[in-house]
Amino acid sequence: MAARAPTLVALLVALLALACSDTSSTDADRGDQPAAAAARPAGERPLDVILVSIDTLRRDHVGFHGYERNTTPFLDQLAEKSIVFENAYTTFSWTLVAHMSLLTGLYPSQHGVWKEDASLPPSVPTLAERLQARGYHTMGFHDSQWLGPRYGFDRGFDVYERHSGAAMAGLHLERAMAKRPKTQPFFMFLHLMDVHNAPFEPGNLLYEPPEPFDTLFDPDARAKLEGVDSEALWHGSETVTPEQHEAIVALYDGGIRYADTKLGEWIELWWKAGLLDHAVLVVTSDHGECLDQRDRGYGGHGFAFQEGLRVPLIVHLPGDLRAGERVSRPVSLVDVLPTVLEGVGSPVDPRLPGYSLMGAGRQREDMLYAEQPDRMEALYLWPWKVLRPTVGKDPQLRVFHLENDPDEQRPLTRDDVDSQFARVTAELLQRAATERGSWYVPDEPNPDAGPMSEEDAAALRALGYLGGRDN
Ligand SMILES: [Zn+2]
Image (cartoon, rainbow, N blue to C red; front, top):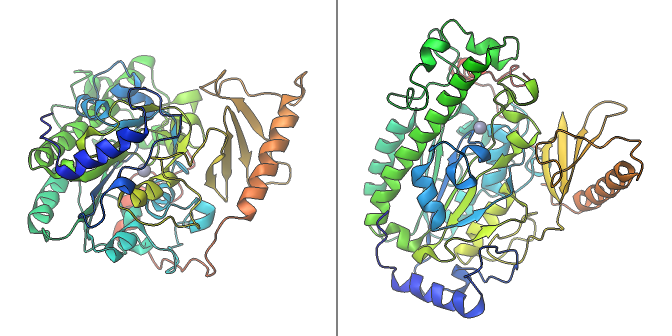
């Protein structure tokens, strides 16, 4: 991509940061990096913020994490100029829950929006509200009923528009960017749905990327999948041959390449216009995807397993500051909001459980959480992961050592000779109880989101939700 010369602000930021750190390393686990914007001279216009969520993008299907297919040529280039977080986790593999964490900086049990009828309490500020209060012009573009005003996602946005597909998103973006007041810093939240499974409609395959992305990785995918019931696949009640499975994955990957292409078109334009010289750009996803992993069919977005909870996360800073850093310590989507706040020079909010990713806050020894409070939770204390059902009298815990078993194929058993199971579960459960005991939770209950329109309910059912997400 054609990066312009960094602005004065970016150069100052880079120089001040370099004075305090060693950016030649490829691993930023030293944790001694100063924040970019914390070093910004007083009186400078705050950095713009662009936050992109590519829904359902598996971490292991992007080029910059080693995927063999060329799914993300643009993001691969961007990643080379950015900080890449190798071990980023969502807060659960559901669009609603994860995006609420991304945009409030709170875990699901804190924001409380983990049921279809719960909306965000008014006292909990969203990222858009926080930035709007600091003088930002705020623009949100989304492609899902789960991100609608019903849940409070529109709060704090001067512009909050829904698109249907990336092509329409491009029109909305172009219009809003042209009309935005140029005297104000801006915050843009962009949600893309083009990697997600398609609605279960006659003639639709499970994934339906537009031409030519539908034939990019398997020219015969459509023919191979003729007659396959996508809805049954999603619910795990239909099986496919290995050849058909490969065709499904090729279509999923085609959607990734499409999203990557559109994102590349837009960001290249912003780059040429100099916007990236004065912006923090974050690209991530709300969750991964199942793709018949461990014979669980194609629904549920990977549930609480690694394929569902691991997400790509890259942060680009002005002037390509800290380009090429690869951060291996585990981080969470709840860290994105504190990172942005630090990037724009906002004071730390002690109520937030996350840390800015620019500094030494988040350590390898810190716990991470993924929560669906009425079903399952995953507790992480590197390299351990405990999966715990949150319902039932005697929930069966599963314990994994993620360094030795990154794909969760070999859970520890209770009768391990060295008693690791008992030791690990006791430690993680105890720490989780202590930490959660000190978490901020709003005083007020989550307001009822009110009735969902028939149209929205039908659209969500067509995607496998509202009773279908359990696969
Ligand atoms: Zn999603």
